[in-house]
Amino acid sequence: IIIWLLGLSIIGIIFQIFILYIKSFILGFTVSGMMLTYKIKGIISSLLYLVFGELLSLIGVLIISTVSTYFTLYLIKLIFKKKNRVVSNKKEIKKYCIMLLICVILVSLSSVLESFLLPKILKLIISWFI
Image 1 (spheres, helix red, strand yellow):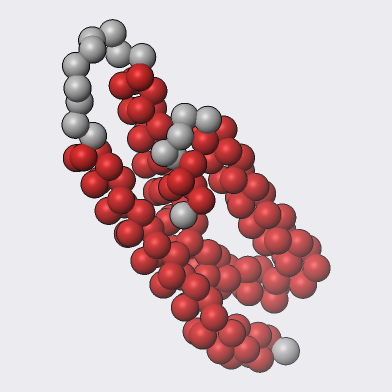
Image 2 (image 1 turned 30 degrees about the vertical axis):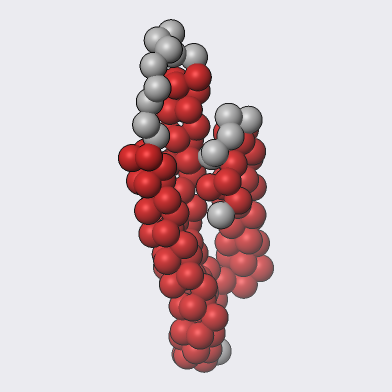
């Protein structure tokens, strides 16, 4: 939702890119740390973590970041447009809000999977390798 709010302002495009970079960096650092520390168990657990937990979340964040950047560029184009006519933004804002709703559903589904399903699957898979 923060990325969505930042997309409503022109200055927010810088922060959107920074948030996406930090999220990706933390994910990569966590996965590589698990792989180096736990070897084969780390590879399996990190793959399970990525597939079930982070895949939907990452897709949702990427979609909302892309749409947010597009909307910010649309606003910039409207501001610096030479013609002085009134433009209705309702259609663009409606599409922007629908994409936010879709991304919130994706991230919520990812949270539910990560909270309830992933620990049981990880215990089952890791018990096979111990």
